[in-house]
Image 1 (cartoon, rainbow, N blue to C red):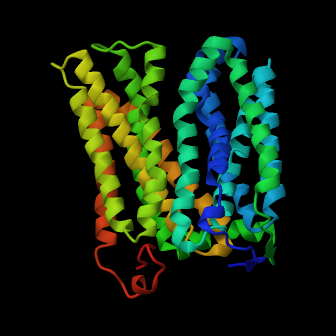
Image 2: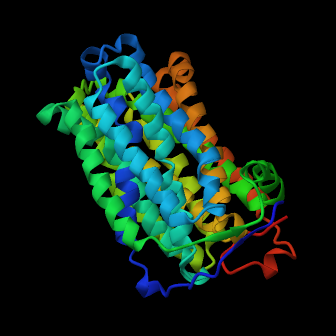
Length: 417
């Protein structure tokens, strides 16, 4: 692997790390990734996208995946502060183009660049994590991740409500303005982390395969979260159909408000980080995986015939809350684990972790249609439970026998085979 060393950066004490502004920053930066799902009808008519409106989210997420693989590794190569601010600045400009675009081509191109530059989120996480002492890193990462997940969960209902009140262009304009303000704050507060590198960009990108090969914790954690993301997207891609059908028959506002059900689950991210800091990684991971299985079973029960609409909706809300809680908790545990790995490759490790489990997101969205066609809501819930159960079984088997390496690993770190 190419040699890449960091210049010394003072490790902050836990009390000196103000994580809330970073959580707000990543929450704002992620708002543009999924908002188009709630605006698809407006985009189809206002911009003239027609059937291409369904491509907006795909292009945005494709751009995000490209950023994870091509831009986030630059954290290990270039001075971090100007890199992050430049990337966020490009995102502000892309959001402004979305707010003003009148032509389909301009809107689609800007959507891709919004996703590409949203990868600045995954640049911030390792930079903030590098400032925390190892014993407190889980809490710090969890605090920042709570902002990210809250932004993901709120983006769709927020887009619906703002578009309904002020028009869909206002949503992108407000997002751009808020991100510009946070970027100004970050310019004066992002740690001045300056890697001292001896490799080219091509060598840096080439080292990604070596990291996947050499870091079993990265592989395992990405696999667990990827399987849970299949369950997550199976549920969230299909639940709108369930809510719109009998006996619930919810409209767009009702479906948007339902999406808020999981917002409270974001509090689990810092809790999960603290559990990892206390050496409870294995137990907490099993618990989070089991919660996703339980959520899938409750969702199945909530869709059963014979229940009153109120009972059905209550069970589906509970399922959504538990599903988000389990997925967010496992992701926080995973981010803590990978941030304890090679500090010289922290940017690449974070980008790989997110990029790899992102595949699970795509698979979940892809399987939702066939699962619904095969077994309707029951098929969706059974498939979601199966993937979460697979993650749990794999984790239990892979961590059942502590190895010699695990006895010398950092506190709370996962054992290596």
